[in-house]
Length: 498
Image (cartoon, rainbow, N blue to C red; front, side):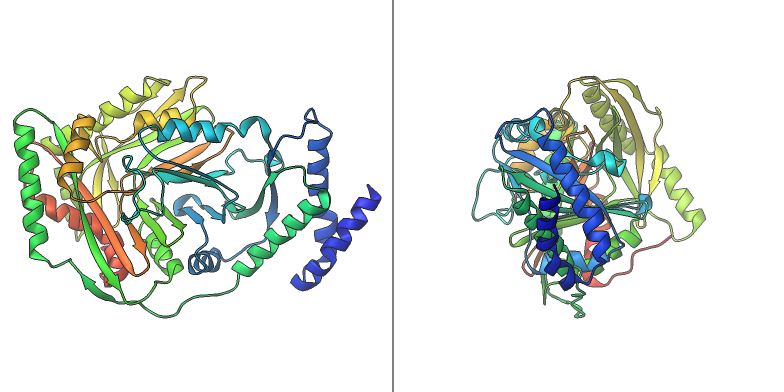
């Protein structure tokens, strides 16, 4: 062991000098703990030569996540960003050591098979971090399977698209951990230490300030194209005809707005803006190849933790008021709206019925409450249930997505109508975005209030539920409200802060 330690000291010596770190801290703390971690694996029950997945976490000093994000975006790394501002919970997944890219109708089952092969050969020291909520897999799934298409704006993402980052920065309650992930194929300890050095060096390079300092402008857009509203009216009327005929109870239609920017934006600036304006939302960004998918979702699809699953039923909306009295008046109007209450009950029924297949003790209030965001308020029913043993995360996701809040009722027929009517693939919009690990912990948002940025082309999305009694003009105004979180980042509109 002494000879090995001297070898590690030699390996780290120049690395330490180049980073100007405290020598004692690095050598006596991180190296020895990593050595101990490797020796525990080798001295354990497993003595075979199978490929293993190693995940080693270690505390890390405070870091400017914004610099890291900007550099990842600038250098076109695969990366994942997840922030819950009101809970002081932030994740940055950097680069990829393992990808799970599946296409087609069996994407969920095939993803599950590919991912679960690692469970028996996964080794970590997460107990040292005193947390089961350290993420491992990150990514998302599209609204519906699209298959491989080189011409799609979504061609950088698979139908089911997950990855294990090479490095994870994980912040919770002001405590930061740096998680190193390795695919271990019987490399020597010296080789693993060198990989650890490279990952440390990667993070140090990403910490460099790289703020762009140039405010982009909108060169072209279809925001004021009158044909957009005409097309929307036609689509809504077509949906209403189908609903009145009894084929559907609800169809969720969406709009896509296109902008051409003068330059690539400062991503950190955009994400901070979203976090400041929507602190109770999921702020996310998933960068891959030439694409960046990002947004601020108010809707929890599923949080799985400590044997429980939680979800948000979120349907029906109305603007915020300019004063408290007007705001309360609008909220009360929403709570009394027969149309919106029916829409909300449909989503609640879908989620609770879905939960009943894999959970007990389903807990929720029969009457919705108001969820207030900066520029809009929704009917909201938090739902919680105790999981039955033996249910995988992917089996849960398959049961609860897509919900009536983003697709319709019945969902299969509504999905067919959406595909035939909208004229574009939704891709990751209204899909699933989130993270999970092998400790049966994970959190996923419905990826609404979102946009795709591909080079300098921005595609922003927003939808609303069409039910009996819907008015095309009012529904168009609702989509305008839902587009505002994204469009205000680029058109410099001010978001109502009431």
